[in-house]
Amino acid sequence: MPSRKSSAKPEQLGLVWTVPGLVAGVDEAGRGPLAGPVVAAAVILDDLHPIKGLRDSKILGPAARERLAAEVRAKALCCSVAEASVEEIAAVPGFGGKLAAELKAFLEARSAASPG
Image (cartoon, rainbow, N blue to C red; front, side):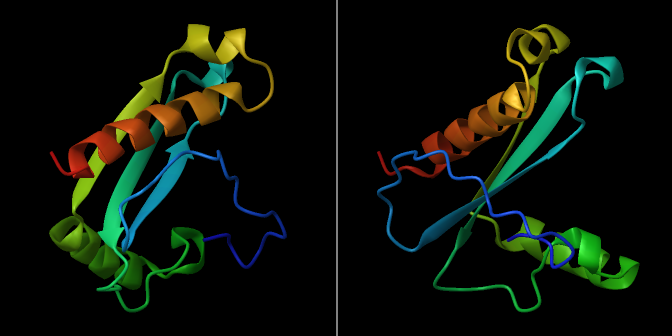
């Protein structure tokens, strides 16, 4: 979900997702090789059982963020954390490192959530 402070639209990677009722959220920390690796997390939630008040963490107060973080961890069907190395970031200009880390995290979470 995009922040209300930003007019940016969410990035869509066009990945195939065929599990009805599940929603994957992905976000990263870090942006470039000068700051070290980019780390991203993907969380898969059951869209049929939404978490009330879940929003972009940048617009939540500290108490709400902590409460929601605990609820997300408790209710998530799966979570994944992945990293894009400094070398991977440098190899792809722009937001390549960000997208590489997000893609890795998503694919790991999708694999964990896929039946069979």
